[in-house]
Structures are given as structure tokens and as C-alpha cells.
Amino acid sequence: MSVTTAEPNYVVVVNEEEQYSIWRRDRELPAGWEADGPAAGKDECLDRIATVWTDMRPRCARG
Image (tube, rainbow, N blue to C red; front, side, top):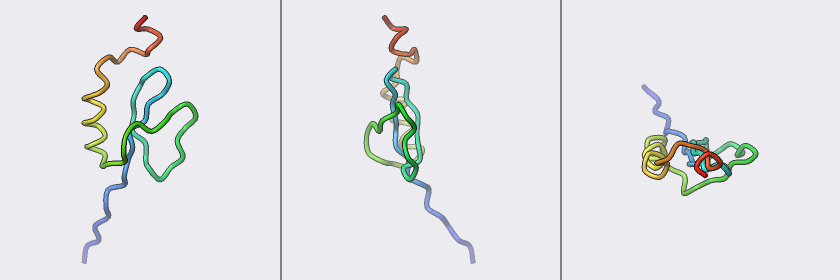
């Protein structure tokens, strides 16, 4: 008998420099980061980041 575990839920997070990442939903967010959207699977979160993070430069460098 095989045991299948569900993929952990992730959340897209963003910092004050408008840099994005994903974070496990069941862990406390690191300082300086906040959730940006609902929890989803890892692939969905990465797809969202690919859509919204079009300028990889930190906000302070976009001046």
C-alpha cells in the first residue's frame, strides 16, 4: 500500500522592495515579508510570480 501526501500549500510573499518568493503556508512569515494572494500549490504560486514580477530589480533601483 502506498501513501500519497498532499502537496503543502504555499503562499506568494512580497517584501518592501517588491521582490517575490513563495513560502510554506504553515510557517510564520519572515520579517519584512507579507502574503500577496491566497494560498495555493507550489506551481500555481510560481506561475503567479511569473505573471506579476515583470521587473526583477528592487524597487529602490528602479528610480
